[in-house]
Image 1 (cartoon, protein in one colour):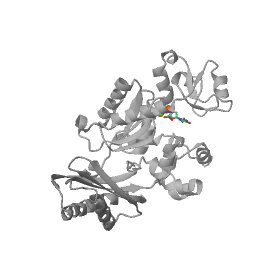
Image 2 (image 1 turned 60 degrees about the horizontal axis):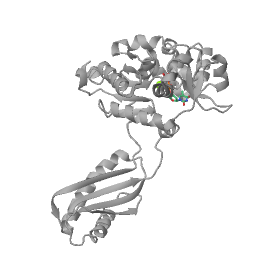
Image 3 (image 1 turned 180 degrees about the vertical axis):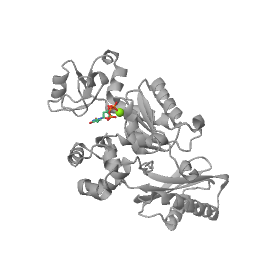
Length: 357
Ligand code: TTP
Ligand code: MG
């Protein structure tokens, strides 16, 4: 029992309300009380999103402009300003970082935060979420909604419950009740087609799925059966994917006293190298493209030497150090740094998805 409590996670899913449209309303007061949408203006354009006023008319994201105009003739369709949304997204990220660095961004306006080990607000994820939303409102003049739950799946669904400008907590004792009546189409991974197919077999809610079996579900949704069965009980073991696609990995040290002997420099390089190797283990999915040695001289001038390389090799760093030291001109050395460059390989689907925004 203690074990189970101990391993209980606290996940917050934050999602901005009608994000692009909200930024436009903020920056253009004349649009605040009228239905607006953000989209292109070509005849075949579709809307990116629309404000809640427009949603009252049935206007939705991804709807063709013409259809939206038919539903809501007074709808104002404005051009998007991606660079502004990207900047706001960075500002939101900076607010998240005040509360945790365990952040998994899903798109410009959405992220998971893991606050399981946060000591803030006596460890209350509910209060942390409230404060994050308050910060966003006070500093950026935008509203966000939040879901607070023991896992990503539940937190994401919960953030939609009290939109806009609301939050919903699914505490561990509420998981069962929350999930039982959940329509299957709300489960990420179940699109309209799969939802129709499941319905045809009599599956509409999580309760229907629970009463069945993985084997039966497999005949309908294939490989997704296992996940679907777990979700119907509110189970989701996925950890946050916080790894950013970094361009390089670097480590350096400033000496307490400047040094000038090659032997001393090499000894420092060797100790840095073993630390770099350790850190590299966490990035084993990346392809190395370059090794670099940097040295800073006593007069604060620095020099770098690099070489194309597909591995992290000590002897290569040593050779680079030797070359860098030929530029010393009798100056002592105050800092040595090693770094690895990575090639631009996309590590998973998430990254390519992010690139679409
Ligand atoms: P969403 O969070 O899906 O939508 P939203 O923030 O506009 O509205 P909600 O209050 O329901 O969360 O998407 C975030 C932004 O991504 C949205 O403002 C515009 C963009 N987007 C598109 O460009 N095309 C799309 O089809 C969708 C769904 C979103
Ligand atoms: Mg949103």
